[in-house]
Amino acid sequence: MPSFSNHPSSIDYFKESFIKNGLARPSRYEVQFSPLASSIDMTRDSFPAESVTLPSRGFNTIEEQWYGPTRIIPIGSKYDSNVIITFPVSSNQDERTFFEDWMDALIDVDTEQNKYGTIVSTRSDIKIYTLDEFDKQTSKYTLYEAYPSNIFPISLGANMFNDYTRIQVQFEYRSYTYSKI
Image (tube, rainbow, N blue to C red; front, side, top):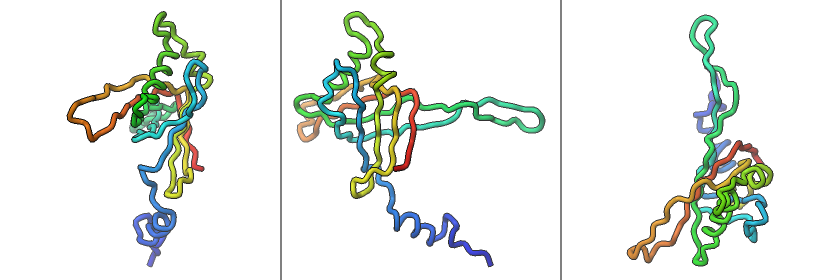
């Protein structure tokens, strides 16, 4: 009779993989920004993020048919070029100021001149680390040529006195790498 102890649906596999090593917790992460242009106040390289969408990845494909059924062949990497991160906002608005300044550095507000090449392409990466229950980094996503492309509207209201302000920022990026630490 065949042994199923190494089968992914077996109890032994579950014990070995998840109970021994633990499960990844979606609430355990940190976000860091690489140094940016000198026109942006970089007194901090990170803000605590309330939520993060991790990047997705796929392939650009072509259809090929020499004989028989059509094949779909991968020909290059495709990145869903946006990540949305939500940050709590401090009463002095440091977080909003940081992202406003970063966006202003990309496109000069007065002249509408694009500074993408000098700001983004050389020194604008975002690193997202997943953490275990002991705050040890377990994986790293590095988003290359990242920049904030959208600050979503923020709601304020007189009935929100027990809440706090959050800012959602959408980031575009050219590519990313994933590495297990």
